[in-house]
Amino acid sequence: MTALPLIDPQTFETLKDALRAALPEAAVITNPDRLAALLAEERALFEGNATFAVAPATTEELSIAARLCHAHGVPMVPQGGNTGLVGGAVAKGGEVLISMTRMNRIRAVDPVNYTMTVEAGAVLADIQNAAAAEGCLFPLSLGAEGSCTIGGNIASNAGGIGVLKYGNARELTLGLEVVLPDGRIWNGMRPLLKDNSGFALKHLFIGSEGSVGFVTAAILKLFPAPAEVQTAFCALPSPEAALGLLSLARRLSGDQVTAFELLSDFACGIVCDHAGGVFPLSERAPWYAVVELSTSREGSDLREVFETILEQGFENGLIEDAVVAETLDQRDRLWALRERTPEAQKRAGGSIKHDISVPVSDIPAFIAEATQAVENYMPGIHPCAFGHVGDGNVHFNFTQPDGMDKQAFLEHWDPINEIVYPIAMSFNGSISAEHGVGLLKADEISAYRPEIETELNHRLKAALDPAGLMNPGKFVGNVKSQNQS
Image (cartoon, rainbow, N blue to C red; front, side, top):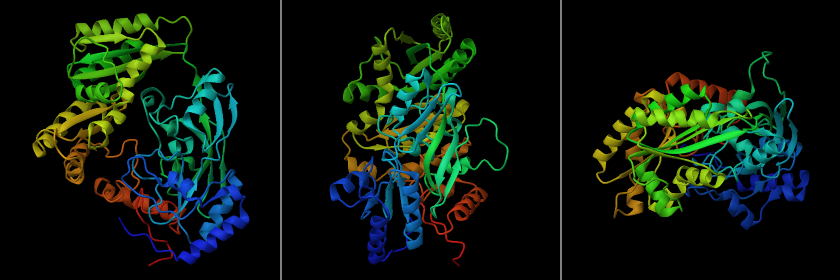
């Protein structure tokens, strides 16, 4: 990682005094206990060291803070719910941490336009509940939804389980409000499905990991709430069978598949052993899929359609066994087998994780080739593949061999990356499907991007943040100011 420029401690003190003079008392955080919670990182891979943080309550307060940081030449790190998995919200180099959690209002829900206007610090689960209260659905759904914030979701272009039907955060965002690195405010809060009046500026900030500005508010796209949901847990002989079942389900249902999640038997087993999962079938299988269909149409024949899909799946050798949820409680138990996999992997020992995306049709070949290559490198390692197979995103993880020391295992993180990443790229894939780049992949991302793509990323960063003050050292790496040689 390129070292960040050193900031004179007196400059930080001068900036802190200026922020205290310009902002309400609650906006500047210096209390060590409050700071500690903001500096802790989800995977404990990185240690934050900010000397103070700013928690604005309004866009105007954030604008003032950014303007003062810019004037003092002090870098800033945006942070939402602090649930990211790649260190993208870590103030590692002494930057000023900007917490968005006090900007958490849901400003409006419009069930006629099917839109919702929210501030960046609004918790994803609260947004889902507010939509449901108006008979609508906000379909972004992921494991951290009880604590992650929508600003972080937008900044990381979050995916989750509903991408197959509804798309990533990018597809769910109609308009944005953004504070630029110099403190100016761009108001792009237009709830329009069609707007070709210039460059689509919102897309420069969605998925940018806070590297070019602060997302402060958004207009989100809503959908009619489902009137019926059908969920099944299916035992499968192989990932190839999973793709066959996915294709069958999409075709026979008229593309009403909401989610299609794959998990290996090892992944399912550790959830049952370490995270309270209850296995619902009589016998184990090599692979499993959680399949969910939904419709907003009252009085539909979705259950009959679902049963037809499962019947044909059995007849075609795609399914070995299956159970369909009959109650909401049963549905939750089936989903727990997939959703608790990350938690279970933590408890099962050391884990090395990869957030891979490949074309859906290449998932079986990628899993087979990459698994064999890693097992050749480390016999006895436990492959723990699971993920959103419907959109090509595989969380291609590994748990340490039985009896191996956890720390000794984690020392193999880079060598195993060097095995897995080139294989993913050989399938025209990505080494960062939905978790982002952050600090974790900042040193290696350029090796897996075309050179011209890296150049264009750096040009955009330099154009929007010429002083290099926004979340430096991450995403595209450090970029020199245009005024520097």
